[in-house]
Image 1 (spheres, rainbow, N blue to C red):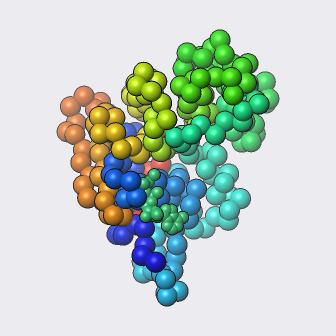
Image 2 (image 1 turned 180 degrees about the horizontal axis):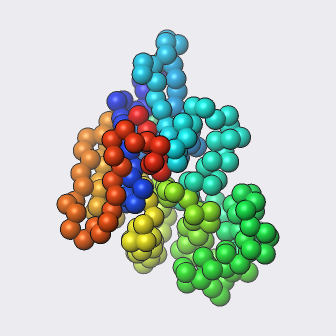
Image 3 (image 1 turned 90 degrees about the vertical axis):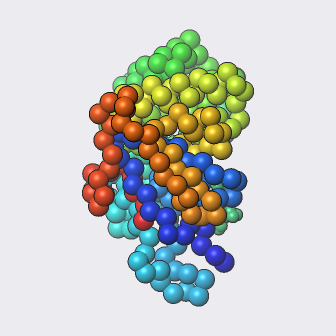
Length: 244
Ligand SMILES: Nc1ncnc2c1ncn2[C@@H]1O[C@H](COP(=O)(O)OP(=O)(O)O)[C@@H](O)[C@H]1O
Ligand SMILES: [Mg+2]
């Protein structure tokens, strides 16, 4: 079988907002899941020969190759927030409980501390009056905003989103776009996969993929970008995520 990604190398700076576009099957999700440690790069080709050089993924300074699955899962819970096309909330649990779960898993906050922070996050996304509602009794747009709150629970160094508006109507898509812009304005690093060109254009850096290749990687010039730091080449220890 042919490799899904070919010669791709990508570094995400600590305050960057990046969108990844490309046709279905071009490798966008694969790249995102590798970046976030949900998948690991294959280390050998179809003949069993080791890739040279091997693919490497760094997350928040850690070479994921050195981590076993449990350690990688723990790093992911702490440093990477995921938002998918489908919300994957625990449907019988309240919005607040869903958002508190990653914090309880991390164990830095007490149960009441986690529940308080969850309520705060939900208020930020205009869900203050729905915190006790079971996830399956929220609308699609509300569920996706709960999923975004959950992704941000542990203050991850990067938010990774795969077609986050793919299942939403226009109005709710717009709200998600506004939330991402706001988060980016506060310095949150974001990588968003989308095939919606208009949505992609909201990010200052746009990566286009085709057939497992990065076709282009363009940044709109500084103006208005504030103090956006881009990752310096080779400085992977300081970046939220990188793949090579
Ligand atoms: N786990 C996997 N193992 C092997 N091939 C895969 C795997 N996941 C996806 N693919 C293949 O990789 C290609 C890119 O898929 P994907 O990353 O899902 O693209 P996109 O998100 O851009 O639609 C497709 O040809 C798909 O069939
Ligand atoms: Mg995909």
